[in-house]
Length: 333
Ligand code: SF4
Ligand code: FES
Image 1: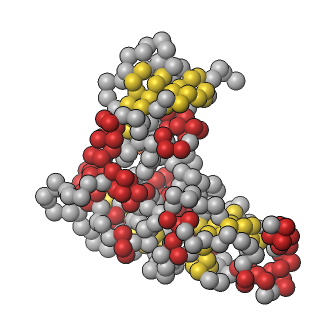
Image 2 (image 1 turned 120 degrees about the vertical axis):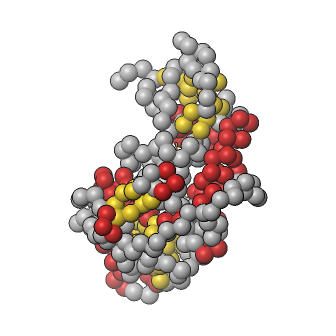
Image 3 (image 1 turned 180 degrees about the horizontal axis):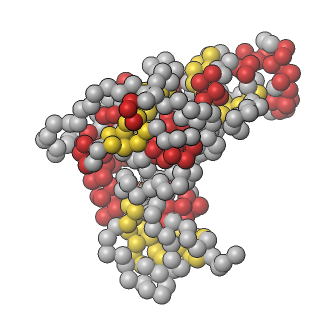
């Protein structure tokens, strides 16, 4: 294995493999210095370079050539060099630029968080909170679109789309035969299914999990609840199509939705199939593992279950047996 390279981000030094992007080096350090990423998705090849939210300043290029880079760079698409020094939250220039990027992303994005199912887990909502300004300088008409029906499981709100391309990569890389993509250019670009064909394959539901905003949401969960009132619980099942490792989102004893398990960067650990996501919403379909750990900074971490087993499991002998390990663990706690 080739030698590691040293990179310093906001004063913290780390050794990483050559070829690592600045963003991934920052993720290895973790914490506040990690740049936000609206379009990069580590599990989707070719993603990144579209949204510019991950801009950073390279104040020293490398040990060999210490000149700073002349402009801010997209950290998801820029590789580290040995001795490189990078500034993210320590650079007022970066913070100012990110404010501008958020302003551009919000030019067309409606502020309909109060009725959007993505509220509480929307990366643009978080960014707007951190970097948004109260007023817009944009005086022109917002984009509007004809409603496009992409099937009974997934809802598309084109006005909320920030054209990050993640869902297009999912369609390309996870499903058989590409069925949707970005049509048009510039201001006229839009996500569409070709000849408005419904997305119909085993992994199409993953576009919901990768969409950083509320442009693609789960129709089976639509308007059922606010996500912060639901309780995320990790569970698995023996699925012939995917790994069957999911998060179940409970309200009381009812599973309101099923998603992939998202890590601290909002990326799913494993993509899941549509049967797991849309068709198996009974507790009896699953072996419960335990409450999903949610970052304490997230609004979702409020109200979630601290202890297992869930009351519904305690009432059913078959479920008690299926979840024996969890029962034993919980009783030890
Ligand atoms: S619909 Fe969502 S995932 Fe697809 S390009 Fe738009 S914002 Fe990205
Ligand atoms: S995350 Fe880097 S440009 Fe979008």
